[in-house]
Length: 303
Image (cartoon, rainbow, N blue to C red; front, side, top):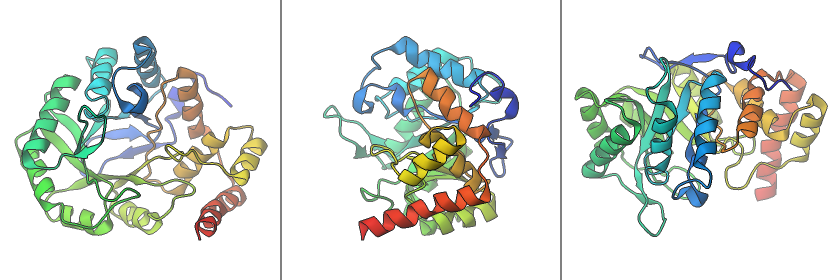
């Protein structure tokens, strides 16, 4: 598959404009979590390689980077600033709040007004920005996905920071449809970031509803996360197309709905190029039907 500079001309997987904004991004973006050290803690083994990956992403046409100041903590944002500041015109940096990383390397909720306000200022300082393009509030929820419960206090606080000019737009992460509706009664929501991939499709109806509203849906763990997607069907399709299984999994997401934006992460330039090449992969209706069967098979295995 093509993995060279022609990709910057093909506008990765098409483009998307966040609702009610002037922010337009290519649908193939980049997630910065893997730029930190093992366990998303501390600096990377090779800081120069991390800088190189970010610069290569921008050169290849990526203009949507997903990050958080609790990655590292502080590490990924500091690397983004080192690699790309002053930022190129049109780059959209999306960050998230709602967690903190104490010295024991655990992931703890950080959802009080004080926590969220401090988190915004941490992101601004470490990214070298006066205002954050988009901030996602990440509800900690359950281990395997979102849990119902009010997020009004947190969204109201972010809406206040938006009025003060520190945040331009607000998104949500690890949330339910009811929580999005609750947030929308307070402020405009431009994107939702939830766990979704070929085998994990609980959000199918939710994605379609967000698409009707023009709201972006950004899958985290698009390739399965800590337990990568594995499927004989996926491998067979990839073999036929001369692609890797992960390229096919990313291409399926781009075909799934026009409001889906991808942010696969990697700390390797070669792997970055491979991920971005998925934006040029065309899947036939028959192939899509084959791939759609993977989720049903995964559910059957669970039961």
